[in-house]
Image (cartoon, rainbow, N blue to C red; front, side, top):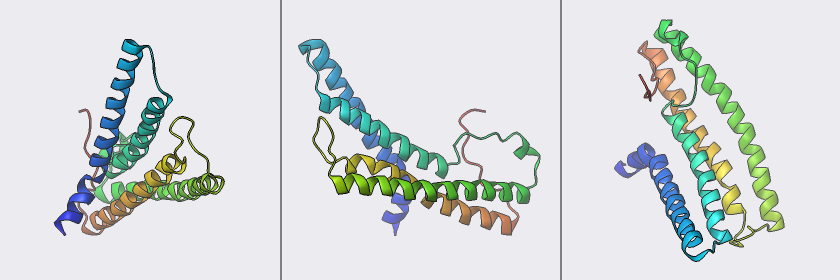
Length: 170
């Protein structure tokens, strides 16, 4: 049970760390190869590009989890906890509907890539592995939104302050 709780708490963090380290190391190697040997590889550029894509989608899910996505919350300071919870639930519901639609279409793209066996130019690896970043990101977002719904409905029922996430700047 502790393992599952730890994964739930830190999954996005670990994934972001892996993709970020992969991006930085590969980019550093490619810069050194280009400057010292006047040679660069297409596979290095692909790894950096696809690591960045995974970073973006997993990062979006992490932002949903922490309510760190961009929003205008000036009016939220003047609302009751109940109304705040209702507004957050409404916003998350809209985001959930968009995520369902996007997940459906991203799975369609994934299926087409798999069906026709498309591969990347440099690595010659199936593009399915890289296109999968989009459905993975939306699936993680949907999971975090469901957790947010549960948390917000509990706050609504109890009349307590709704979770507003951590602020980056005060």
